[in-house]
Length: 278
Image (cartoon, rainbow, N blue to C red; front, top):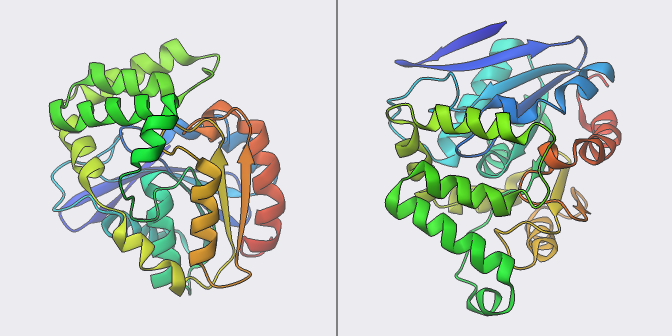
């Protein structure tokens, strides 16, 4: 059953499944909580209460927010945790990985651990060398630039084609769902605004995180020439000993949808240490 939490004049949609320690899921840009459709059952079966969130402006959450930065999303996630009676561990993907960092740094009383999937958590200088050397990265960069400039669902679908180097079994229906949602008035503008939001706010908070952090990268993620190197840099900016890195071979920017069994195998041992009451 979908719940709606009012934050100011707007609402955040989420559903809660299972019993046990609380884990909050937050998806990336242009997506919805349906992104975690393969991960939720495994977390629930392992004994967790899972709150799966549509981040602001996405899915069933309302439009018309004043901003779409990682700091904004972090505040929403903390509000959901407090509403549900945290503490909680957060699993955040892409932009929500950066948001999870900010949530952990600014609300350490309610955030006990963070898993970041293919996260945009650091400022991203233009990697000219990577663009020249790595075709996958060059293609992803070009297609994302077209999305930012033109705001067309067709361009986003082209980006997703490279971001999912292997497609889930339900890809046709999932792509149709994404296209239908982004065709709603205002949804593509949110995607563009999120793309333009710089991750500097998350990067500056890495040093203030006090809970354990697991970074999961896909080896074929088109958003970086070297996804492992990006993960290493995030770990280096965290306080010593807090971060660990895993790279899933063959995964792209959506490892939780493309390789959910491997993500679950990484997440469960981490949550056993980091989730409250686990």
